[in-house]
Amino acid sequence: MQQTFLGHSKVPSSRLAYGCWRIATSSDLSQNYAVAKTAIFTALDAGYTLFDHADIYCNGVSEQIFGRILQDNPGLRSRMSIATKCGIRLKNQPHGAPARYDFSKDHIIAQCELSLRRLGIETIDLLHLHRPDYLMDASEVAEAFDQLRAEGKVREFGVSNFRPSHVSLLQSALSFPLVVNQVEISLLQMKALEDGTLDYCQEKKMTPLAWSPLGGGLLADGGKDLLPGQMDYEPSFVVAIVDWIAKTRNVPKEVVSLAWLLKHPSGIIPIVGTTSPERIRRMAEASGVDLTREEWYHLLTAARPEPLP
Ligand code: NAP
Image (cartoon, rainbow, N blue to C red; front, side, top):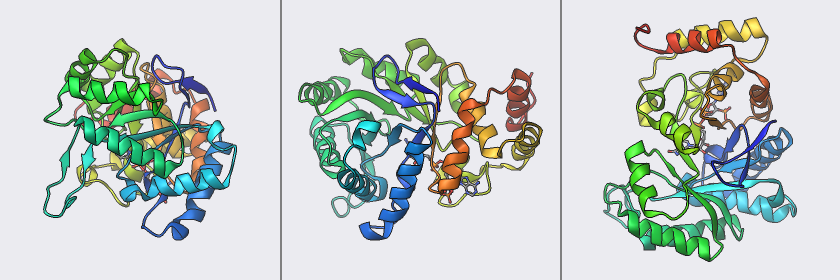
């Protein structure tokens, strides 16, 4: 698979990343271990080198299993870049508290240290802020980032689900560039193409990472465990065009949806979320598929509610 770097940084990444949200489905480590290990080894062998986590994925269990697999397989860590996120506090933590965002210095530092411990590593290659905190004080975030960087706990920082105004505000307080913005982008969710998010990334040379690049599976044959915002996606029309291009090119249909993202000049890195080894391998093929402009626009047109003006 083709390799690249994140934003202006020296953090290496494959053109498709592997997302670890779904590698754990329960708090039972032994139950999830085999599926996670197979997925991670399959992804590495297929050329994926960026692995994406968050402190809240399965309440920390995804990071914990990943850490156990790293510990059991010396040498694995050096073959990959590891990303994680913080900034979301789940409901009832502590009891009675609402779900909320928290970019306070103390919370960012504490969560980063917990992630390092669960992953069993010394440095996180990329730490994202997960969702914009309505109470974000950019200078307080900058203090947290400076401290984590000075202590060698984080190499580079990024954001997730940020609009350009959020990025610009945070960037104004930092002495180094943010390297990524991780947002939902797919043929079923195209806001980032129209609200300035991808333009801003391209201008600032930040790498856009695309989460749910297959709409949680709706663009393939799946669609289980959808996020609330994905429940009313209508895939049938665009899937028909995806199928048609896939047949014409003799590639799997997932590959067409991923290649549509890869074609964008901002350098989108789709984060593949399947745990099926066969599908992990199959999707890696997308890195070698260059859609024509005509194919790209066929897909865009099919995905839009209205024809292009
Ligand atoms: P996705 O690739 O759009 O969806 C993966 C889902 O689709 C899995 O349930 C998978 O099931 C299913 N699927 C894929 N191909 C299929 C097929 N041919 N037939 C049947 N089912 C199929 O991505 P995602 O998992 O939603 O998200 C990817 C990553 O993005 C996550 O792991 C996480 O790292 C990141 N993420 C970030 C945010 C954020 O706010 N920053 C939010 C959500 C996700 P199988 O496993 O059975 O194949």
